[in-house]
Image 1 (cartoon, rainbow, N blue to C red):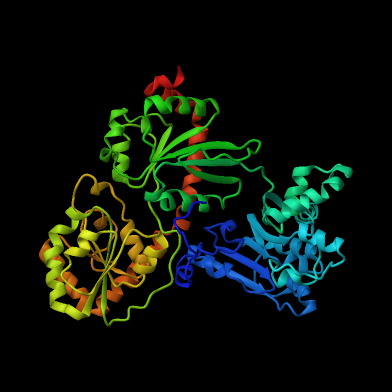
Image 2 (tube, rainbow, N blue to C red; image 1 turned 90 degrees about the horizontal axis):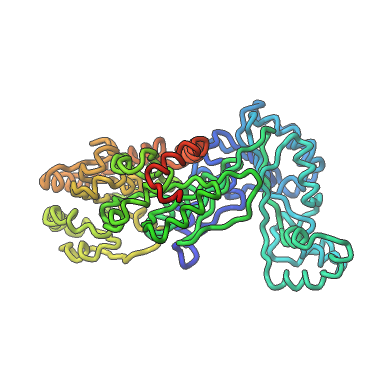
Length: 567
């Protein structure tokens, strides 16, 4: 997965972003679960991280002390008050091997799941190559491997991949995905070379042996449903990753992959390739691709021959780039369907392609609540190329800054001209930065300024800035353009329609901490209840499957729009 962060995240950034240092199992849990039960021997970070992703979930932890030998027997009989058929997901993070009878306990606890409920487990691998080396050296059970956790170094039942598969099958579970964790580094390659004669003598499959011995642990995903899965592969070519890779591709992919049978991969300006799975249906998404007839007709023809559903992804006004029109909007006409971020964009795009889905921008996780200190009020402005938007209000803003002087400071990201136009010494500037750094700065602010002029380009923008401010507990003062459709005036934010209103309302936000804090709290609750990605992501897979079901019809329509594709 691509990332914009060049250095390790700070402790504050880790606190704000659960994906900065996620637990092994976090990205495997169904992101829209209502009830999750984790059974284990130690409290971990998975629960707290997950509740930032889905704060509406009841995440229950059944935890016993590692030092108590007989505790595993309690897991089967603990009176935890869980009714059969009510749990969405069971989680076993390195706990099954330490139970005296894991098969019996797993069989019992799977009855807590509803008919489509899932089990996610992390299980250490006895075939891990360092364990094999330790056994050959007579050091079985004497661990010097610093990569193993305290839990993994305790006495335990040993599991091979085959034994894991048998364990889950005996509990009536269908395993649909197995991932490995471990590095195939230089030391591992040396191990493979040394043991090569034994591999040949035992007639072992070389690739299978390498996969199983490199795995320090297995991550298992299984479902109680025994119905065959409809498998879907989503491959995205990101042509403008800097602008919106996280928001429009990486985060939706991460969530979509939590749905059984779904894989999602992406590549930067290249076709992401993965090993095929039999029966897997394929979707290719072109993100912000400017398609020319000369370069893209052969690519699109090849994808059609291979049975792909072809989707265009766009979250910006195509009129900004003349290349789209010069190529007769092949980027949208030449695909089966289009996905976008706003209904305003969809209205324009439906003139070019009738099959347009709107997937609004959402927050992938909810930052922890912030505390408004109420002393110095910090204003926030973070944007690029917005001079025409902020110029009408800059004089009024400077009047407010002059009035309050030392009581107000301003933090600006990206826009140097805006920063230089502020007539106050109490200001800070941050150049173009990582999204993690952007969030860290936003989380320290009290009031967000969101000016947008009513231009054709702006009218197609999303309300993302408001969502970000709301998630970080920042009260907003915004223009009606875009934001009046989301902000509840006087409840979740303030809308200004004149320069005088801007000045008056900004002054009120500065002098009245009660109003400021109540607006921020209401907006935080609103985004928590309505605009988290966990509440919306299943729509993507559902739409892709609907389009796949109509593929013959869509091919006929595509032939009518762009007959050159079928020559």
